Length: 423
Picture 1 (cartoon, helix red, strand yellow):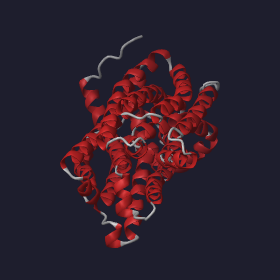
Picture 2 (cartoon, rainbow, N blue to C red; picture 1 turned 60 degrees about the vertical axis):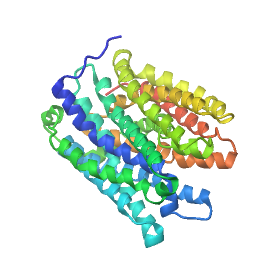
Picture 3 (cartoon, rainbow, N blue to C red; picture 1 turned 90 degrees about the horizontal axis):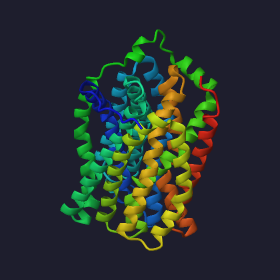
Picture 4 (spheres, rainbow, N blue to C red; picture 1 turned 90 degrees about the vertical axis):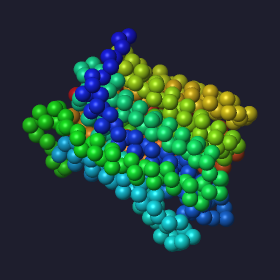
């Protein structure tokens, strides 16, 4: 196995500026999932706690329904005008959505306008996120050193793990400094305020980006109508790639966004324990993603995709059953780190595979649409589906069935995509 050389200084700087917006995206998404209980109390009050929580999680999931639309509209914009301008626009929209959630008064002060504005904020975030990951992944793949695409593209996902660790550590600090009533009343807004303050720095970083040579060298940049026509021609590829992403997105939101709620509400562990596990998961993902991305450059994408999709199908439900029948901090940590290893290994190969599978003229739009559809159908509603499965079945390990199903979809998609001749 060859080992990837360190990224050269100029390229390292470029990679850091590109992935900065991904940090913001995942930071915002994680905060909404982590503070779901408090957001439910402030914006969706109800005498039925389950109903209140479900309304909050459905609002969280609604943002993902906007991702396919963002992928098509913003993806066409990026493929036509360039990667750099598109990345600046997505960051601006994400910042506006975050500000709405941070500053909107609660239901007690402005009534139904409060949950409506929060929903608008989530929809803006989802619209922006629809092309954020695709835009960044394509940019990284186009500036990558030959033979090192997997290693370069893996840093897109690695940046999201930094956001998870940062957000979880911030939440841990707040839980130590403030009382539960203070956090529920106003303390939960502090991380969102901090996110708003970070935005100007990230914006300046992205403004200094250069357009990729790959984009500049192409003589024809397709119009929106040409891009939409091409997507229709390749609809089978887009659908297959959507299923390729299914396991990755379902597993990711299970082990990150849903972990604090699962640990506190289902396993009855402390907030500190749940956050500590989440920090460890983020660090584990951060370590494994570039390692397995580099490995995919050596052994290929297909073997990793098949092996780790199979591992998820075979082990996720037994692992959660073992955890939930006698929960403890140590058992939760072990299970989450195991799932983190499987997720990161699969995801590192999957993301770069998407950049290679999509036709170059519609690379950003096709990538973003496939990923956004998968996130909307399999990932964004994972916390809500997990909560509903536990409620309906009475079995705390039931969320594992959802991840198993997603894993099966991805395994079938892998065989389908790699059985077809590449264009």
